[in-house]
Amino acid sequence: MNIIMLSTDSKVFENGAVSKRIASYGSIAEELLFVVFASGTQKEVMLAPNVRAVSTGGVNKPLALFAGTIFLLRETAKKKYNLISSQDPFALGVVGLFISKVRRLAFQVQLHTDCFSPLYISESLRRRVESFVAGFVIRSASCVRAVSERTASAGRRLTGRSVGILPLPLSTIPQEALACPKEIMEDVFTVVSVARFTKEKQLHLLVDAMSFLPNMHLVLVGDGPEKDNLQVRIAEKGLTARVRIAPWQDPAPYYAYADAFALVSRYEGYGLAIMEAALRGLPIVVTDVGVSGYELKNDMDILATSPTAEAIASALSRLKEDSALRETIASSARKKAEDLLVSEKEYLSKYRQTLVACTTEQPYTGKT
Image 1 (cartoon, rainbow, N blue to C red):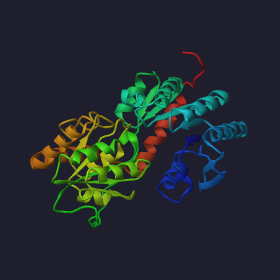
Image 2 (cartoon, one colour; image 1 turned 180 degrees about the vertical axis):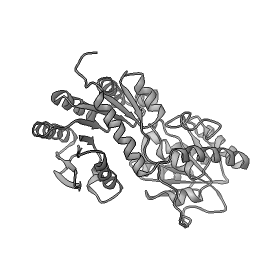
Image 3 (cartoon, rainbow, N blue to C red; image 1 turned 120 degrees about the vertical axis):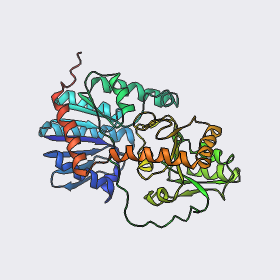
Image 4 (cartoon, rainbow, N blue to C red; image 1 turned 60 degrees about the vertical axis):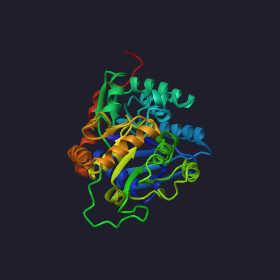
């Protein structure tokens, strides 16, 4: 089976986790073409003997999208592919659908984001357009790969075709002893949050919650466009001694030494950091996003909170004051996360099964 995957992740051209993961996909295909739609110079690299990564470049995102589409038309004219898979249902989804119709390929769309959530749709005009486009693409796809029961449920409401769930792979717990990060004081109850610093993560609410919790510390691990705004907010509220920002890195030491984990996003498709924290035995406070209420049940595996500073502070205070509660929900969540652990071989086998199943679905023809 020859496969094309569409992405916007330029990290595939770096020697790191992304390139290694895509290289491993060589075991699920005879040939894999990984096409990156990103502005900049043209790039091409062989990640494995049968895995080629290509970025067609462009001076901006629209031209990169155009260049990538032209490349795909030429590539699929001279070589037979069986399936094209898009890592999102937005612009890449439109490109994938177009190529699948022109070349009569099976088309898989991947649903990583809860793009039909009212909070997603209400965020901006762009989000409303994306949600509309995603609905059309999903209805038109041969199959859908969702990363969680939440996103799968949304997909099933839109299509009668196959909607498979394949979560992002969880990392096993490091066995070696980990040094305590400098941002954590071991004798103070500390909450950690691991996230990209963007508006939808609502990390400012965690900062504001600390104003109600004088005997608690917060460590934000990550980076992103909201970093400067977070630093200003921390300073304005006089919380620099209790709220610290750690640069993006392997979060394992922070999970090991924190007392609780919190994620208060507006929306999440899955929330890999939630499951990582569960796997490492941390009690979790989370808004109604991703695995919350689905893979992890409210008041059994996690504490659900409303997205207000007061509600978040109340949930965290409850955890701090009730050690039995912390142990109960952390233990339950950890067992759920451990049940989802699979080896790389098992993950790749399941991934191949979703792709093979997709080729048996009827590609979109414009008719229902």
